[in-house]
Image 1 (cartoon, rainbow, N blue to C red):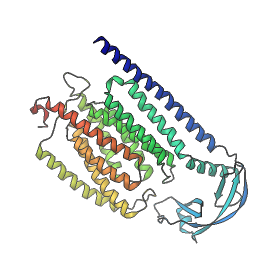
Image 2 (cartoon, rainbow, N blue to C red; image 1 turned 180 degrees about the vertical axis):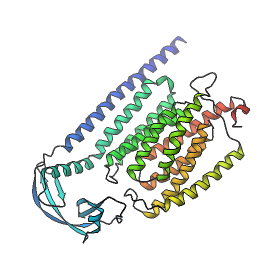
Image 3 (cartoon, rainbow, N blue to C red; image 1 turned 135 degrees about the vertical axis):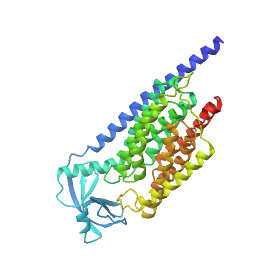
Image 4 (cartoon, rainbow, N blue to C red; image 1 turned 90 degrees about the vertical axis):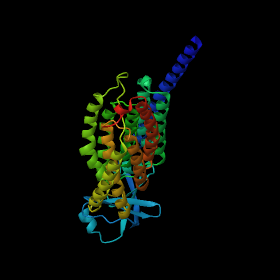
Length: 406
């Protein structure tokens, strides 16, 4: 027995050492990669020599409409390209599908294209920064994701006794995959917002959602504190990308209030033996049928209403695809409302709703090209199974009449 405890203590020390090494390496990786990117972006002092002009043709793209305050139009000639930002009025007055681009070369040999001659020092520097940031997006994404992964490891390190080995492994594995995907699949700019900022929002959304999911599976009321952060990030994402307005409205007027109310409700129903646990229960069959009918009605009504709105976005450029996403989003928001109520009432059926939400949102992410968010959905599917099993075992170990809603 003594040998067993000594071996267990030695194993814990080894794990702690690995966690400390990981924290140091991630800190260095984040600082070094971000610093490298910033230095590269600011290498140009604004001095550049004029090379000549290049005639470029407008690339195929969807029409800009009056809801846009600005319109980004891309032009290219072989491997040379330029993106010009017009006001909607200037866009309407374009008299051709070609443009004369003015080529400049900086002291370090980088080629820049502008839409006018006699570029100022500040214009050269800004164009240089914009192009370099796009080229180095994997570097910046690595710096951002390393910082978020660092926070994940520190949570596991500080609250190690609160999580099982499986929970630690699952949490870190999902965040490592998100880091890898953020580097392999960098995001393009959309609606005037840099792709690096969009990736930051995606990674924050993944981190907070994964942590929230894990705490729900542990029947911890503190998941709702993390969930408030989730809602804020997702509202910002919807505004930045100008899409998924059903989800944004549901988040703003339902999820934020229900998170606060659920925290209060869960705090009133602590387990008699373990203070960190919340008493959970289940629905009856006919109640589940009523919930499903409500979801179907919500999807049809909200999807029809939103599909009739003419909301401009350059994040999704195919109208049929946009309409499909609107209806899927309406369904996902309906399931989300049901899920929020299930969580508030501490019902096991919330895990079934999580399955449906994860499937619907996976479809939206694939159609929208948001591949890094697929890692979040992988986390949903795996933890939902884990949570359903844990809650079922808890319900089975308690009296059935105390485990149902009515």
